[in-house]
Image (cartoon, rainbow, N blue to C red; front, side):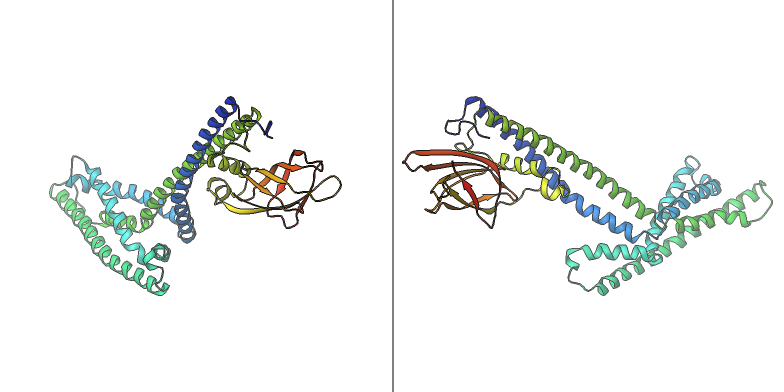
Length: 377
């Protein structure tokens, strides 16, 4: 409530107002950062949800666990071959084979998994240039791409498998020549090739899981950043409103002095900070809209009286208007949504022509269809 509305603001109240404005400005800067982060966060969350829905029956995790186990077995049975090729660091070849297996698996998976084809269709459909293309054309394009990748995948798959088979035979031949072993090339010597084949098949979803993990981590960081900026907005908004309330208590005359848009937004956000639609109603900066107040003023005898009103809203907007001779006021005020009148300053002349000023406080919703009837003393 404004005290001493007919007096100018005190120095102390103006200082408190200045602090309130500065803190509200920080809140609005934080809300802008939150909105910018949300614009990055939203499409990533939608993509993650869509990927999870599409890939829900693809057994991604079991395949990947099997891939890790097979990689270990493959290296165990192939390490002698790798030592023949690179004695100083045989593990480098093992890691290279794993990497190549993942590349081959990614080239093959499009044709082997309908889930991956559906995921690629979803991603292609999101491209703006494909918005007007029929779904059948997009699916045909995806199918052509995976067929082309299948060809290169098979060529690379066979080439690497043949190389492992060749080096395995050469190792056996050298061991026989050196007298280290007597048995010829057997089933156990084919195991490196077998594990290589299983490694490729088990690795079909490894690249997808890697991409999903990267996207999930990025989404986690942005969600954390977004929550932080929302909390900064909330704390600064609450502090700004407290400083402004104290400014009014110390004599800041809101009817006479200006109120910044930072503070208007602060009181708007203060009202919506506990809403379930936090982003829409709290972080977003709303658009102002024209709202109306209909009221009729009568004296204690029930007779209409012409008045001039100054109103102050919950968001600290102010407006003035003079009623008609019937005491009816139809006032328009440009404010943020769901604002309401909190205080009237009513000026009128009594029957003996003396100027009267009354102050009325309360909650008067805007856009009321039936006029409020306000009785003056």
